[in-house]
Image (tube, rainbow, N blue to C red; front, side, top):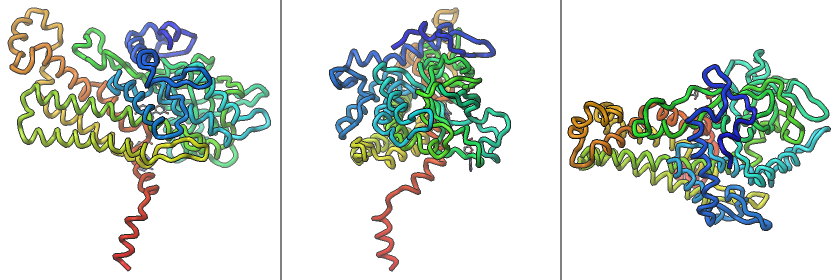
Length: 470
Ligand SMILES: Cc1cc2nc3c(=O)[nH]c(=O)nc-3n(C[C@H](O)[C@H](O)[C@H](O)COP(=O)(O)OP(=O)(O)OC[C@H]3O[C@@H](n4cnc5c(N)ncnc54)[C@H](O)[C@@H]3O)c2cc1C
């Protein structure tokens, strides 16, 4: 756990054209406090959130799952962490910790070069993260600059991150990564490529995977615009004034990375294998989808609460809409349970959730989440957009508004706060970013669905077809 002041460690964070100190930005302070719930829960609910190994206690996310009960305990811990932020923080520390647990065991395939042992580096890195409970963020997606060319054929030098110098003690890298969520408030940054890095023959300098502290000289974190509303309170914007899981464009300008922190270098096949074969993809997906249900549960409950407070929940047509949302929620919960029940022991004895089940969640959850937001918009309608700022309740019009906006179901203040929450999640910039996050953060749903179809086990279905058609 760290305090916001500890993040003023020399890291180069830019916001709206200025280099800033992280501690100066109120919404970063609030976001860090929520993120720290991950550490806090280890103290307040250790039975679920911790485990002991060789006499030391660690966060449960670091446990290598050996059976379904391990996955179930992790599930519960991920869910409780997500509940502390209503599923709005996608990249709490448990996300990448779950990947570190398995990277340490599965790193042998990374091999070595003449300067360093990549397999040992990855293992030691994962162990160091676990021993010190370091908060990592990650950047894999490369900026989309020219889709007609392989990445190393794009002349700008910022189409990805690449080695510009190889030395006895490490590599010097330059370039950029497109989006890095939570970079300003994390400790360390894990950089690698998606599993389909396309390179022209010859130059494999973009084929790198490494880790580096976020205050490394030459690393620049350039934040997107903030989504909070200074001048308004959390009664007006219950979500966007409480947190901003900030996204950033990350630039590397001659940043030095010692060999001990390099896991892939100058090897595009290894770069393509890194995410999947390390186990990081599948185990982080499990955390991610559990967080996803938590958010869907929040959004579904919000739509239902809005229907009730606005006196709409007795209408059959409204009940049908709400029933679609609750059915969606059950489907997602069931599919995550299936991912755990249909898991298998991999060749390292790691109990691994079913990828097809987890990808089914990722393929469907964005649509279900969007549907919950749409239902909320449609039900909250004009009542939602007509809510005045909370300061009005203490101004000249306070008495009128308190009387006019109170109903038999809620006081003016309670009704307004609920409608403000509905607006924030369904319609504000914060809400739209959450929608985008749910849609894209796990990769393009088009590609996820395509992969799902290609990998599905249809032997039983094909047997029926063959029987009928023969
Ligand atoms: C809020 C948010 C947070 C994120 N956080 C992170 C992070 O922390 N770290 C990180 O590495 N990444 C992060 N990402 C990036 C995310 O992983 C990517 O946005 C996602 O993988 C999609 O890639 P892209 O944005 O390059 O989309 P593109 O590949 O540019 O796709 C854009 C659109 O074009 C379509 N398209 C593209 N190619 C084709 C084709 N050949 N045929 C048909 N249609 C096509 C796609 O289907 C899609 O609709 C984040 C994204 C968001 C939105």
